[in-house]
Image 1 (cartoon, rainbow, N blue to C red):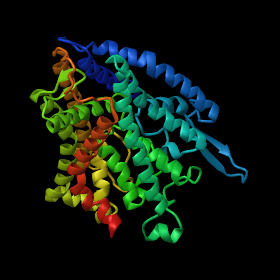
Image 2 (image 1 turned 45 degrees about the vertical axis):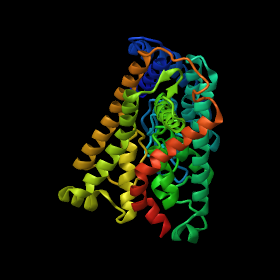
Image 3 (image 1 turned 135 degrees about the horizontal axis):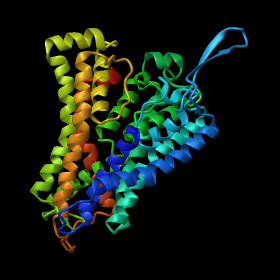
Image 4 (image 1 turned 90 degrees about the vertical axis):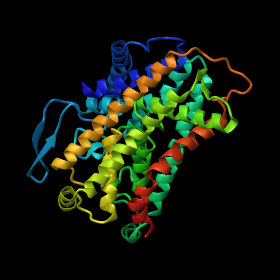
Length: 425
């Protein structure tokens, strides 16, 4: 149930923000219950049924047998796990929920039997987030606006996948070079590209499902999934969450563009004033604050630091710092993937990561709804020759740069202490 509801909430919030741009002088931004029910019954549930059947045909387990003991050809016993895996897998990927029925996640053959099913799962987790900009363009009455947002998402997605695949293919590091490749933690059925494609897709959305172990990636390769989450998971992001995250960045980009040309910034006929910029700025700052504060407190408080270093971090040094940064980044962005070398089952990390998940999910939602309400109450401002066009390649480039620069300025110092320090030595 939570897999469906969580995804439907993201859709409802995104549509509320889109209504903020499309409505004029309105005191409301829609009905949450109506949006929630429609998101589940008209989109998530029908698609999940179809995809579950496809996975079932592909060989993914779907039963209620639990554990079954069978005899092997050598005469010994073997326990085979069962369960409603195909149905869980469908909503897990379509709703960008993450995790897996088995501990090995999407690397397990009962959950992901073949390379083509791995591609199918990637398509499932990307389908709705990449379709949301199209809905945005339809609802605001200008398909070009949706294509512009889609262009930014696709550009960032492709750059990230290419960079991650290239870095892993280089096999930097003593062990990968001696082995002739960075295959540790990767399923041989998928290889490097099949693994990096899944890793990039799952961290550029808010899924957290994996078919390889990110902690076993090379230092610089492992940095890329971390950066994907630090971008705010907007390329294309989670179901609904990616769209509203990118629209908040678009508000910032329009404001920057307005400063450059000396005009009051406008986006889709709505003025971007001090109130809108304050809300957008708070949205941008919430997640970095949670991540960096959590990491800092983990090392700044003597008793907690001793526990983290003695119990949680199994790989001391800069890689241990990377594992902790990844954990807080994943929690605050509601991703769910992990650097598996970190043991988070301690009172401090259970509490701190739980708080990061809670605040990282709901504070941005509150701010997005506040922004939607502020925009919906405005009347539309007519376009003039001085209005910044937001459907052209120039704006696509500006928005992409704004997303990357905000991330770089915020997280670069901690990245230099972790994966960059490890990868460049």
